[in-house]
Image 1 (tube, helix red, strand yellow):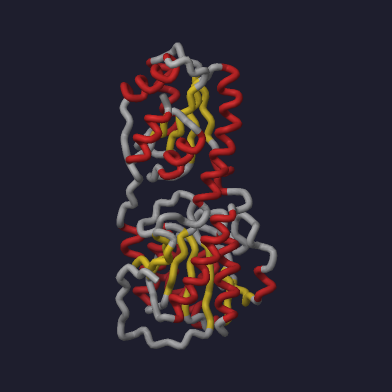
Image 2 (spheres, rainbow, N blue to C red; image 1 turned 120 degrees about the vertical axis):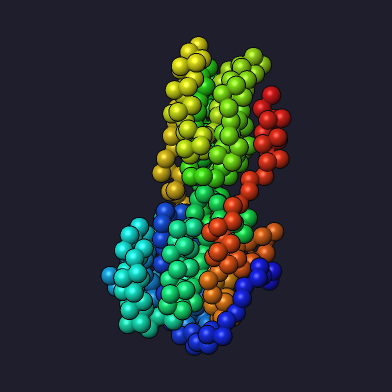
Length: 338
């Protein structure tokens, strides 16, 4: 196993008898597969599992249930999360985290496995530091924006959902000779936009990592129509930097009124659906690896995958370091859009 440096400390002496598991932040396809893997890997190793409902909120309110293997039967193919998820402002406070710690003690939970994105891991890191709790994170987000892992749970499914939607939009775009701006999720990361543009044969991807100016956009559109294309599709990452699909469409109407422009915002459909085989396998591998890490007395780390090998990434690096997009893919996209 390739391990990115994780320091062990002198207070790691603990007997792992019971772990808690929760999902937090935005849901992602494959979270249920991860819950299943964690639960069954723990029980296989003689560790009891307590499911915490509604994320960190459930830790504060005590919404907890012991899981057996049958509790995770027939969920590997389900989207969403059976544990539910919720934002929790109380957990941002010292008082809220103290209440969560009291719940852990009451339930005799020795360690936590949290599934989510950077917000989830930020809360976990603070909680672990304050109360000396072993916590391991699994990257569950469709944005694929966590440093230290090639892919996050849910990203592949969301990517396939986007491509399927764009393929259908292209049918109508071609029939009416229209320019479509299609907005996809990703927050401040352009992984979904760039890779879905490549996979769907779009003319361009507008991503926050590489600000696109008006003249570049105009040149792209003019080239597309000049070369006898009967439609053009541009994938836009939702972001204040890009302006979003609506912002770009308004600019087109204002400055290039001759074009028939339409906007499609795919929205929450990107989070739904049955996870792909890749996401199910990834979630299963990461879930087992999380139990292995806790048994090996690791803490405050995220389980990642790099070059198809499981890695351990400290929370601080996963959260704070920016994950770069592969800019060579932009060149590939430009070359193939002529």
